[in-house]
Length: 100
Image 1: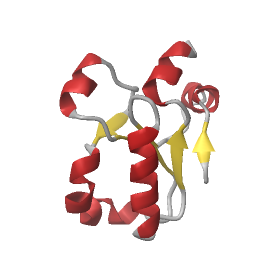
Image 2: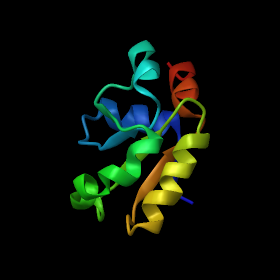
Image 3: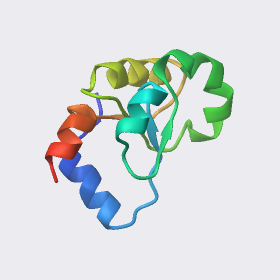
Image 4: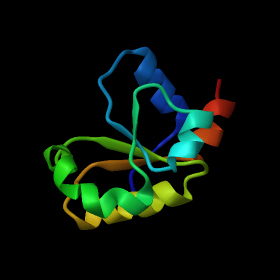
């Protein structure tokens, strides 16, 4: 399983790397806090958006949620549908915010 730590993500953001970050939380959760540059796509809506994500199949995609559980499910789902480089943010946005 490919995971990414909050420290590694912050480091890559500070280096201004172009990143694809999918936030699989619900919209109301994103209103409370979000990771800069992330795109909100709730876990339950992933199946309907597979076609929209098709161009990302061979690119790195970082998924995150609040604690890492939903994003682990999103990671597994995307991998089952041919996405080759999906990385789960360890500890979710909670760990990311604690890393500041």
